[in-house]
Length: 334
Image (cartoon, rainbow, N blue to C red; front, side, top):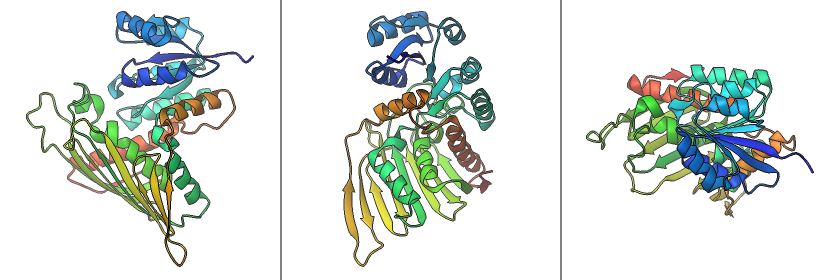
């Protein structure tokens, strides 16, 4: 029997708990350590999510030093990404990291350099890439069936104050950085490298909310090197208790209307008459991304979304926000 993959988790909030749930149910994977902001929180996490099998830590470096880990999941808020990736890479430990991978491209570039220099496996938590309908459209674009990509029209919306750190731009980067980045990533996944960007943001409905310094409304227009374009909007003024993402992708021979990553209507327009096809499944995209990472770690599959992809999408949203800070001034991607 192959040696079990030993995993440590840093950041024990919603995403850390979600990944732990999937990992403990995967054959040949053991969650052996967890690191939280306090030892008590880490102990509680270990008791509730691993039956006490994992060891609790409140110091990431101590966890790396004392445990023989094969991989670490970094599920920390953006502001707390402070050298953990680099430390893991130096130890030869694979890294799964949630988005955004940093609050600036300068920090992200150091993370990418450490991972690539060490040659360890990495993955960014862009779970939407694993959706059934997303994967099908990607295949049809890559093999030419969809024709030339022309337009990505995406929207992300919710209505919540979230955690105190989330509504502080200096800690989260804002909604574009922390939430809508999933939509920006999909635009790049389908269309490739951006060229020119213009963005606008505003706080239209949360001026009185304590500590709220992030945008609640945003819009960006992007032109890609291929000539394709994207319009991406986000709102924190929509329906309370709902987090919705939808997008349309128009190619010269196919229009796809997505209702999330798993479900879409594909309309093929390359023939005499349009042909409609529903694409959908109930795939758990979080389970799929975990399975992909562990397979890559075992040498049984490619790195589906290595850390450099996190840098690419971070650069895009950083340009959107810099443009917005300058009243929509056009920005070059590179």
